[in-house]
Structure formats: structure tokens, C-alpha cells
Image (tube, rainbow over all chains, first blue to last red; front, side, top):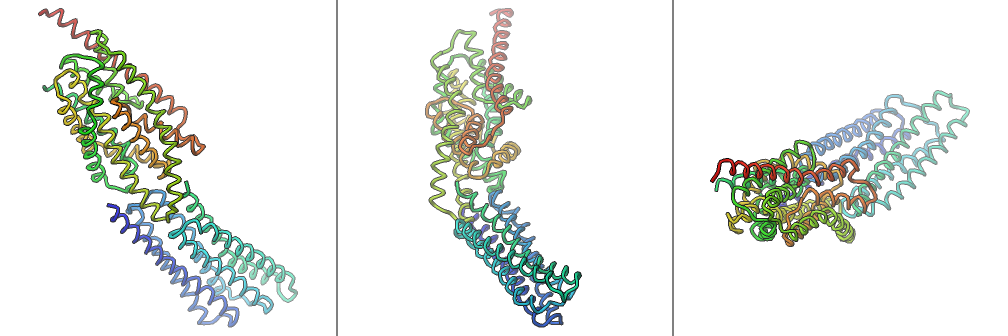
Length: 217
Length: 315
């Protein structure tokens, strides 16, 4: 009987791994897309990268729905089902934020001032790193849940760094005399959109930490 | 011997109701199908009844002596009391209903063994209290083992599910060992059945109740217990099983539902939360007093009426 349980949970685990791979691709497309936009502005290749990110996000979404349906028929404890669903739903908000950001640049095509480019690259890098820590946390939930608590601290550092960078860049934007107020507001929104990634990573890792703590008696 | 039918019906209702206390969690959370759970439960109930059910029979035999017709009345009244209390949504113990009914007959014939009665009442009081302490100890000990094992997400899930099924099977064994005397005990006490036939017929009728009519109760009770969280649910089932097994060894049938409530209170004390509200505890208190009182009253009235009619109709 326990062998049957093992087979079922293993298949859920494999589906979660597939889901995370989809999210990985989406986040990589996000990073490549923003870097490309900063260096080449908007063109067909940027549109392709936006499209790729959308495809990966939507593919991951399909797997998430499949996992949700499968979970209800599986031999798992009700609280484990709830925890898996909760973790995946909170992780799912990360690629959504990435896709939103790329799509905003695709639609609005704002001109990025030279002084922002390096700082924006750094902001993207910090947020992408925060996501890859989530990836690590998801691995540890399966292998050694206690480690998730350490990753929580690392993500907290990334999230604070992202907030600092956002604030620094926002100050530079609003201090600029070349930009009009409308452009300043538009650029500020893009900053917030990029920073959303690490905010959502923080929410996800908090959820994972709770899952890990709950399993300590 | 048709009178034994009332005991079989009582056993059937006991199986239908009490299986939920041991396998409700596993079935309600879909970790095992109802059919697998009911087959496991029925097998272990029968094994418990046959291997360790004789102790309770002996206690009931010592409590009072009477003929076959009175054994029939005792089983019938106990069954009616259980249905009546369930209808009033009050928690009910089959053991208390049977003992109350036995006393209803015994008092008329001035045939009650006070030592046995005292032992039974002390065990009734000891059931929820014992289960509470056992739950507190098990929570600490098994909790420490789980922490030391440092299981991953899926391992924790798998181990806990496996433990719940093992605990459920042990609970079913203890249920059979402890409660079989409620079913055929009055007939063994009246000398109409041997202890061996008593445990076999009793065990089979409880198992029949589990197989045919326990699904809905399992879902209702199981979902209630699951709300605790899976680890606490495991401790509740295990504490209940250990408690009623101890009483099966002592030879006194007790209530599985009262053991469950005691265990849930114990979990609450350990975790510093109120797991059972005062209204529920009040209801349990009312059920604790009313169940033996009602079955006592009914049996006393029916027995008096029978004696009165037999005097009127003459020899």
C-alpha cells in the first residue's frame, strides 16, 4: 500500500519540477528581454522574447492547473495538498510579474535614459537572483525543509537590496531635468514592476518557511 | 436463540458508528478508500474480539445474572438508548447504555455485584482522562522522533499516512477487543452463549456494521478530526487505541468516542489551544450521565412490567 502512495506523490513531484522548469525559462526570457531592451530598445527580436516569456508563463500555468486537478485525486494528506497548492499559487505570481513587465515595455516602448541603464541591469539581476533562490527553496522543501528558513534570510537580503536600488533609481529619475513628469511616472512604474519579482519571491518563501515550520512538532 | 438478534443489531450499529473513530481520518482525507479501510477495520475488529475480547465478557458476567429474555431486553434497550441519544445529537456510549440496562434488571432481582460496578464506573471516569494523558505523552515522544528523523515534505506525508493506517488498524483491533462484550456480553452473562461464540458472533456483527453502514459517519467524524492537523489526528487515533486496548486488557468495555474527546483535549493542552469548546464538553457530560440513566430506567420499567404481567397471567 505504501508503495502505491509513493508512486503517486512521485508523479506530483515530477509535475512540480516541470512547472518550475517552465518558470525558469520565463524568468530567463525576462532577464534577456530587459537587457536587450536596455541595449537595443524595441524591435522584432524584443517582441519575440516577450512572446517567449508569455509562452513559458502560460505553459507553466497549464502545468499548475494540471497539478491542482491531480492533487484532489491523490493520496496525500489534506494539509499537504493545501501546502502544495499554496506554494505553487504564490510562486505563480512571480512569472506573471515578469511577463507583465516585458509586456508593458512592449506596449509603451518608453525611452530609457542612459543614466538608468546600468542601475536597471543591476535591479533586474537582483530580482532574478531572488527568483533562483526560490528555485533552491523549492528543492529544499523536498529534500531538507529546514534549509528553506536560511534561504528565507537570503531572499530577504535580495528584496531589501532591490528596494534600495528602486529608491535610488527613482530619486535619480525625479532629479533629472531632461525628463518630463509623464516620462518620470512611466519609468517609475517600470521600476516597481521589476521590483515586484523580489517582493513576490519574499511572499513565496514566507509561505514555504511556514510549510517547513509546520512539519516540526 | 432468536433473542441474540438484538445483540447482533446493537453490534451492527456499534460498528457503523465507532469505526469512524479509528479510520475516519484516513478515509475522509482520501488517503485510503472506504473499501480498503472497512476491510482492514473489519479484519482487525474480528481479530481483537477473538484474541482479547473475553475479558469484557467476564466483567459483564460478574456484574449481574439473569435469563435469556432479560439479556434480550438489555440489548434491545441499549440499542434503543443509543438511537435515542443519537437522535438528540448527544454523544453516546454503547458501553454505558449496556451497563445501565444490565443494572436496570439487576436492581429488581437484587443481583448486582458492587465491586464489578465500581470497577466499571472507575474505568468510565478513567477513559477520557487516561486518553488525555496518553495523548500528551505520545505527542511529545512521537513528535521528538519525527523531529529527529528530519523528514522531507513527501517523506513526512508518506510516513504520516502510513502511521495513520497502522494506528487505525490497531484502533480497530482495540475496538474489537474492548467493545465486543457490549454486543454479546449480556448473552454470555446469561449463560446462553459460550465466551468463544460470544466473541465470534459479536466480532462479526461489529465488522458487518463497519462494512455496510460506516461510510457517512467516517466522513463526518474524520473531517472533524482532520481539522486538528495530520500529526495531531495520528496522536488522537493512537491515544484512543492505546486507551481502549488498556481497558480491554483490564476487561472493561469503555467508550471510544469519550477516549477520542479526552485525546483531543490532551492535544489542546500540549499545544496551548482550546480544541474542544465548553458547549461540547457540557454535551459530553450530559450524555455521560443520561445514557446509563435512560437505559437503566427503560430496562427497569420493562422488567417490572414483565414481572407484573406474569403475576397477573399466573403460572
